[in-house]
Image (cartoon, rainbow, N blue to C red; front, side):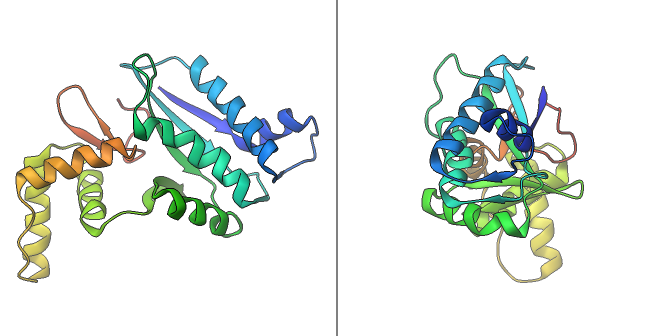
Length: 206
């Protein structure tokens, strides 16, 4: 089930000031992250999965320490080895502006993270990804949902149209990339073995 979390609202509750909209200092970021984590624990699940839209639209600025706390330390536990009783959680980041991006990009590079960004109703993947990861994510996003064989067909069609003479990856290689992107929290793995690009097509699916 999708949950919308307005970071500016969480920030105002954390610092107890309605006019405060700057996400700065590590203690502030840690407090905001703890509040978000509490909201995630309280959220109802759908099929054991949680999808949170983390909305920065009303945050004026964010520094590196807060980006590290609110983004990296929020996402990393789910990428590494979530506890057996933890939700299968995924994240879409909305309202990330140019003013936010320098700090966020530095954090993504430091931790080799990838994120799904929503901009104007469209989603894209950003951060540290290899080219084959980007191609596979894009193919799944275009399909709506798909397994390794279907992704290979999309990539083969793309290669044919591009006439670049580059063979698409094998089904086994695509299966490996799909699972890697799932572990990185940018693809959602469904119970039937299909994958959905997080945020693409239907934010509430799963």
